[in-house]
Length: 223
Image 1 (cartoon, rainbow, N blue to C red):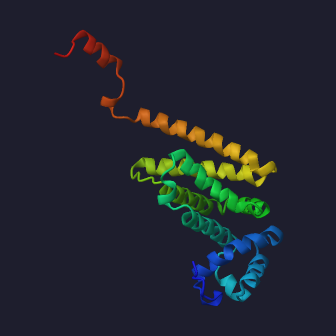
Image 2 (image 1 turned 180 degrees about the vertical axis):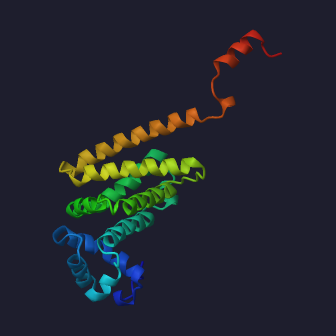
Image 3 (image 1 turned 60 degrees about the horizontal axis):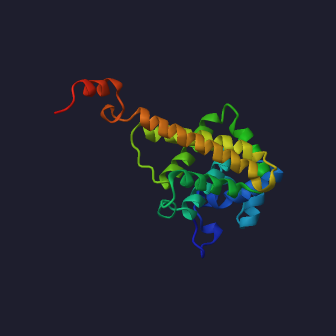
């Protein structure tokens, strides 16, 4: 991200796209994810529209991806691992997801349009990669260090949970987004139950209960 004394015109294109991203999303509420939204954002930031367009060479999906990446970066800055590491694991995940939802308040229309664009067949692979990246960022901040297949199952599960919660959030008109919060709580509880069940199933054989071993010990007690 840019330093406080750096002019917007001094930013690299990568820095510029992240600086513009929330303003493009704000404009997308009215202009859709379009060059018009980029031009409006450029005007707000004080850079030429032509320069701003160079930051999004891939068009609409580049704009949406930058918005997601900006939220990833803001989340990491606001909730470093050292801060949330003191919480129970389910509270870490809930806190991280809720931060992302709070960042979207007021941008529901932009979110609805973005979700529709991301769901298009030609955009689905990139949308999946973006979801995976955000899930990975959340798990890393939550302190996950798994390197085996659990690394992948945790991220796939969280990506699915987050995607489902976004769909609820985008259309949630309840007071204080209470419906979204309740939905998130239920999904996290379900994930925690799944993780516990998975841990029991995958526990080494000598740590699991064995009826055969118990009967053997009853018949031939240890001496």
